[in-house]
Length: 481
Image 1: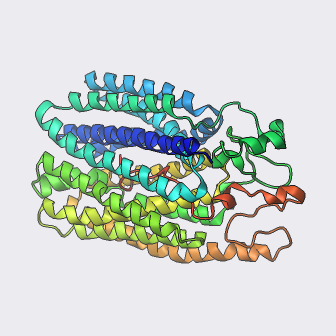
Image 2 (image 1 turned 45 degrees about the vertical axis):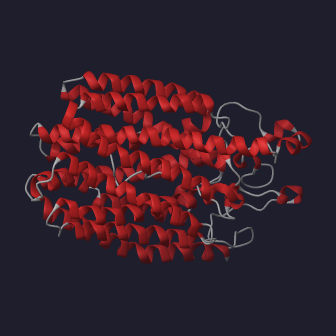
Image 3 (image 1 turned 90 degrees about the vertical axis):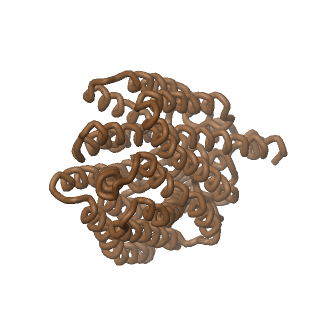
């Protein structure tokens, strides 16, 4: 690999990470500003949960279509087109006064996110070698955390000085980062580009060093290949027991504790008598904790060759988040939420790394956008459940006991899923005894290839030496807006 090629790949990592961090910061800026505006206008919990649902529902409903779109359409086209449209929508949102119009525009923004999130998530493993994915993951996690860290703080300051219009215009400017990234990134996937079968082995060998890992690997058995457009076959979420239990457990825990995103603004502003700036600082504490949590998990993940250990790591970190939420119900002042949210954020950052490493290991490169979209849909579906439960209960129950109940429910869910993970780990072992052609690892069953093709590996196996992905299906706090 030449120095120029290596440098260009890492420049792509930094460019994509900066764009994602910038847009995430804008998203949290806008979400915090709108929540504060609703609370300040006297709206109740149902109004806040309704706004959050508008920002979440498209991510769930459009996940199958959005994932396939991100796998099949050129990534540059998607980022430039959708980024420009989202910037224009934010400008309209800044001048809109009708609550119905605001909800519709927020939903349109979420439609764009449903495509750009899996698109960026699937791009990162194609930028670097499998051995470099942990470092790339940490870089992207850091950018996302910094963006999410600054968004709530900036919102608290800007809303107090200028109202909601200025924060929303700033959010519009951040979406232009997607346009810039789409134009500058050398790594691209999707679209109609030649497959390996059309190229010939001699030409393929000459291009091997220039292609990203996602374009160098094979998927499935003899004669089946995958191209950047996403034609890989053989992997389905429902057929992968470890991925399935990880997705379901994460979604259910988020449904249990996700209501804090609706309850928190009332808990801090009314129960604890905190200011708008304090509300922003508390939200930023969770993001600040994600910075060390992501880096520590990335270092640990390089040593975890067992996929089952990654699923256990997801459960442990989800339990950490739930425990901090439970303890939050006991604080007498809003400032005491800061250390609890720092620890919870560290657990959340680690959970992101473990979950995305598992996805990068087990899903063929050409289907990763679909996998990230499916995971994101499950997470956002859990978020929607939490928003509805939190908003409905807030009409008749005080915020403090609701916070305590959310934390206790999250811990209970984790305990319930521990034996489920144990059964999922044993399941591939039982399948192995059914006959030849079974994989001896805890991964999904893969057909055996014969002849020269056996020198090549599947996408999951190529990533197994220590890869992780920084797509970050859960880019912020559990069920964060």
